[in-house]
Length: 68
Image (cartoon, rainbow, N blue to C red):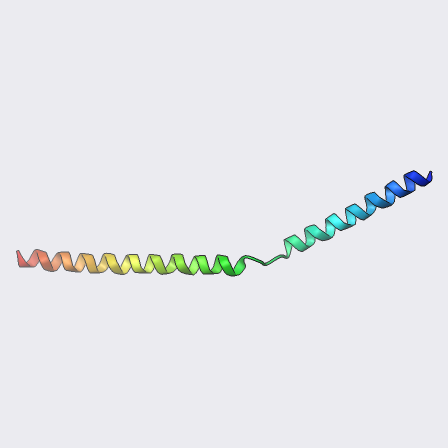
């Protein structure tokens, strides 16, 4: 093997190892989980408020119907 081929093989190996390490880091990266959790809680809160508003609206509509 020539010196150039050895250097190319060494560089290719180093790039492969670095790429594998970077992919492993990305797979175990948990950044953003807190944001997703907050978004899910916000969606749950909006859904709860929508149910409460619908229930109040239905109750008031029934009460107004009884007045007529």
